[in-house]
Amino acid sequence: MRDKGSKEHAVKAMKYTELEGFTEKQLQQHHGVLYTGYVKKLNQIEPDLEKADRSKANATFSEIGELKRQQVFATNAIKLHEGYFDNLGGDGKPSGALLDLIIRDFGSIEKWEEDLVAAGIASRGWVVLAYDWDDRKLHHYSSDYHSQGVWNCTALLVLDVYEHAYFIDFATARKNYIETFLKNVDWTFLGERVKQLRILEHRNG
Ligand SMILES: [Fe+2]
Image (tube, rainbow, N blue to C red):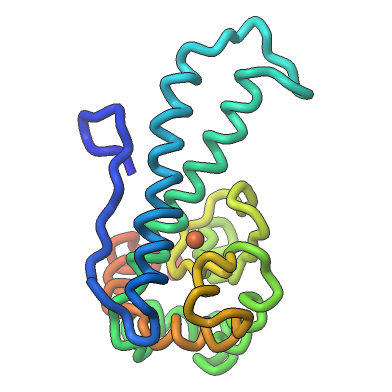
């Protein structure tokens, strides 16, 4: 996202060069073309937003209305993709603070995985394992579109199920893709995020 002191958003590099089960072409198309494209578009949208004529605002069609909608679309696309790429690069073995939370809220890692895979097959865009600061629980929230989401939640594990995320390597075998995604989850990174966000303290507070 935005560099400190800069008006421009920057592409965040992947922390790995390869992932088990994914080809370089699949990763490059996803990160280097799709995700990078959203960053470029947001850098185009925001200067135009500053200049847009507020007096011509209209809900059916207006320059400011379209720019505001696409700002949300591109911003969420960037945040979700950065979450997705940051999730990966690990050994896929569940551990740490997030595992503890999952067991408390889903009953077992097997039940959690069953719910994630089902949500991933049933969704058209994203599945987000999110901590909801209001009910103090984890949820798998599905989203068919970058602009859908639930407020006052923090995304922890982000799964991209848009076809561009897997079609080069897996064609229509989405379940196979999700299982390969799970083999690459970085549980150490996720556990550190849970600690930094002080979710365990909030949950028990
Ligand atoms: Fe994607």
